[in-house]
Amino acid sequence: MSSNGRSNGLEESFMAEVDKFFDTAPPLKDRLVISQKLKEFIVHNSLASGNEASKRKIVCITSGGTTVPLEQRCVRYIDNFSSGYRGAASTEYFLKAGYAVIFLNRRGTCQPYCRSLPDDPLLECFESTNESVQVQRSHAEALRKAISNHHAAVEAGVLLKLQFTTIFEYLQLLQMIAGALRDLGPRVMFYLAAAVSDFYVPWESMVEHKIQSAAGPLDLRLAQVPKMLSVLRKDWAPLAFFISFKLETDSLILLDKASSALSKYKMHAVVANELANRKEEVTVVTPHGKTCIRREAWTDIEIPLIELLAEMHSAHIEGTLQS
Image (cartoon, rainbow, N blue to C red; front, top):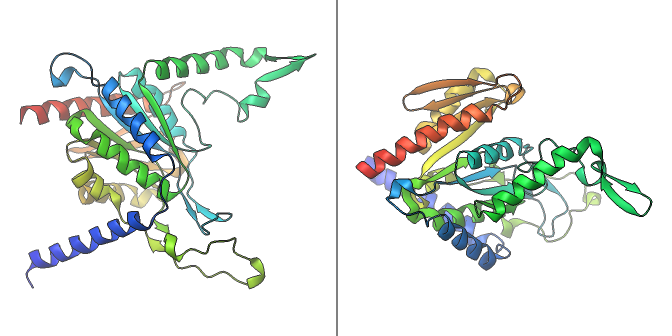
């Protein structure tokens, strides 16, 4: 068999795995409602007059980790580590840079404009006095800013928040978003900061009810989640600008893994970060080289990171429109 024949065979096998994943996944709740929200958001942010380059850019930011349910009526699950801090901070700075943001985030993780608030803002920011409740003075300014900034972005129609928990919800939502944004071409950026599960239990292989500990030790066989990055890049939104993230605990393999992901999935850039110092330093790996970004005192590392990526995106738009 020719190498082209082998390649076609592998591609067909991979796409069959992708189709099987979606065909057997539990249906996404509120699909029609989400579809309508996406449509209205895109229309609202495509109204700018003038040429294509003058229209507002849209970024889909994925944030937080996906879970892998072990039962259909889920009690037990496998989780991926991610606080969602990077995605939340990046959302704030993309909005400041003039982007409209679709914030695809894990329920319960860090939210835009809430990073300066306590972990439990409802109970820690307020106090009870006689029969009324009021904001504690020490948190008043931070709370005012968070509420003001969030409401301003939502009311301006430049922030759409969609939430997931499981790997099934995440990938179905990502597919919906990519399909909705496809016709916008290079104006779209995907900033893929979510920690996505590599392995899962197929829905049809899952027990319905809670796994009983009385049955003894638990043996699990996990299937590999199809690598959707290549499908997203090639088929779902082929003209968009793509940023993925590579997190490792071993600095010795980090840049090699990032370079490999850049080449394998045809990303425009991969942000490489080490778990221990991810808030202090990242390296942006592109086909043209590597750029190290370090956090300056009293600032977020996301500030120079988003500035760099926004510049790269503008160049991508200009190059695509001229070609």
